[in-house]
Image 1 (tube, rainbow, N blue to C red):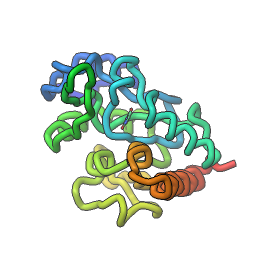
Image 2: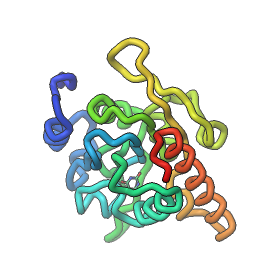
Image 3: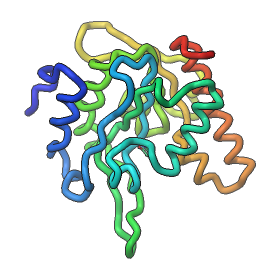
Image 4: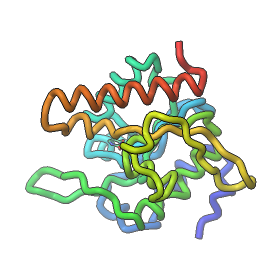
Length: 210
Ligand code: URA
């Protein structure tokens, strides 16, 4: 068992994460994709797992979902450069269909195996506000007691490991891919608007709004 408390910096945690074998996903992914952004960002965004493009390039949210997220951040008055962006699961999980690698939802045990890395990021970045993008990130942070559609749009308290009673504010919102995959353009707009409005709330709380 790794002693995560021994990683003094994000760089040290990221380096150790590269050789993580805590679940079988490392065997199929190209690489672990650790979080990126200012080391003491006030706002941390947590997605699900790297997608196909993130897996190849080694950076979080650089594919189509990332493009939608960047647009939503800009509309919420936030700069991507000001936020720390990461995922609940650091390796891409997929099934091969011919030449394509199709995203597969991580299981609870894969989310749990990866949780120490997410907790390292929280401990080291110490954000004022955390935004969970979608159900996997929400479950990784809060367990199964939350529901994105029921609990989004308001400020919650997220208990941190370590020092007893320490908490950070958090907002749940939809995953950008949900807006990308919506069946109609009306629903796409509706979901994108939800994401923007929740990011605005997070920005206000983190005092990052313009
Ligand atoms: N979806 C995620 O949840 N994270 C990424 O990095 C890319 C797509």
